[in-house]
Length: 215
Ligand code: FE
Image (tube, rainbow, N blue to C red; front, side, top):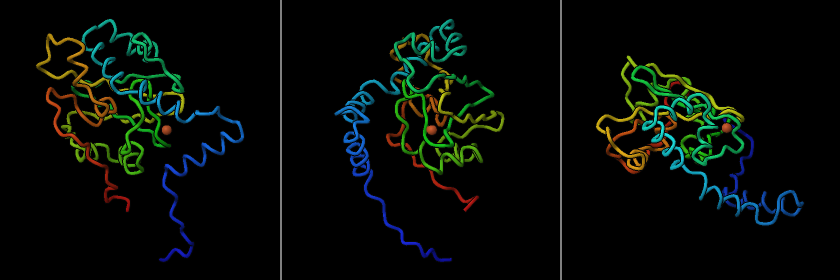
């Protein structure tokens, strides 16, 4: 089957962003320098290092952990991480028998204030489709091989409600300080596609492939 429509390759993302920015600025719909200011703020303020501090505090302080599980946004705000567009932050606690993983099937939403901006693989159609359809197989491909005794629960983000996974604290970290604990916690662990390990292993996170089931 051939597609007779003429397909013009899209311009590079940077060109398209610039064009939208110029159009919005020209129509005075955004203030001058909006894009640069927003990008700078995103780099400085929105970081998974924030979420790592939240996780470390929850591991170290049972009362904080309880508050975090009851009202994620309020507990994150206690540490100075204030939610923006995300109205609610729901924190999902991993246990020895339940593993949580998050996705935005519609687009790419994450709890920016604690997870930072979403990584490319999180935004990919392959991840968004497969984590719902075959989470166990996908997680295994991404390096997280969960035994059958561990149930997997997939949570789909919405515009208002964002999720953060509270990973299991790794064995062997008893007595560690919060700073030391936080250094172990990765964005991938707070999305639910990795465990927290005492030794961080590989540098680059593997890409997500389409898989063969629906092709
Ligand atoms: Fe989204």
